[in-house]
Length: 82
Image 1 (cartoon, rainbow, N blue to C red):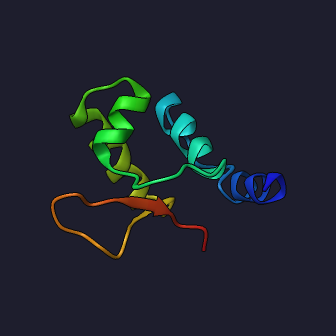
Image 2: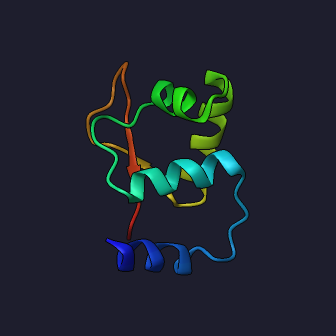
């Protein structure tokens, strides 16, 4: 897992991220269990739901996150390791 985490960050070395984004990405890389929703993101990062969604959308645009296959009301997100 440590090697995968290291490779993930090496491939994205040129991307500037805020502290919340780094914290949550590391949490995902460490094996976060359960659905990764914007409301959980907000709770873990101790930020507003709007800030969490902005962080998530920014990471999607940068190719770091992607929406999980199952969408709907409780859309969840996963790392785009490709």
